Image (cartoon, rainbow, N blue to C red; front, side):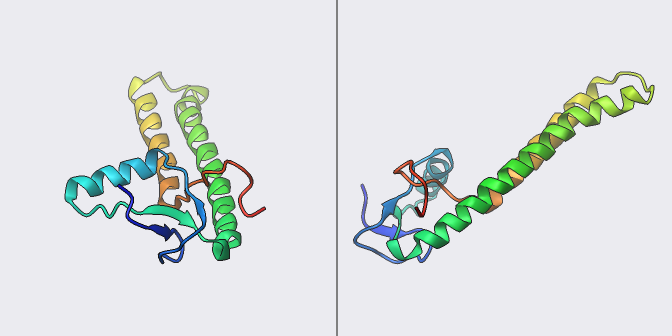
Length: 125
C-alpha cells in the first residue's frame, strides 16, 4: 500500500519523478520498519530537480563499492597468503579471520548506499 511519492533526496512529496529500484537493501529496511510499526509505505522517487545530484551520489557510491570490494579481496587473499610466503605454518583460523574481516570491510560500503533507479538506464543522462 503506497501512500505518497517522496523524493529520496529532498524528502518532499512530489507528483512525478523517477522511481528507485526496490532492491534487497530497500526491502530489508522496509521489513524492519514494518516490524517496528514505523513503515510509512511511501514510494521512493528522485524528482527531476535532483536527478543530477542523485547521479553524482550514485557514481560516488559505485566507485566506493569497487574500492571496498578490492580491499576485501586483497584482505581475503593476502592475509592468509602472507604468513605462508614468509614461512609460517598454515593456520585455518587465519583464513576464517581474513574472510570475516573482508566481509566487514565490504559491509562498510552500505554506509553510503545509494539505490539504483528503476529505469535501469543511465542516471542523470
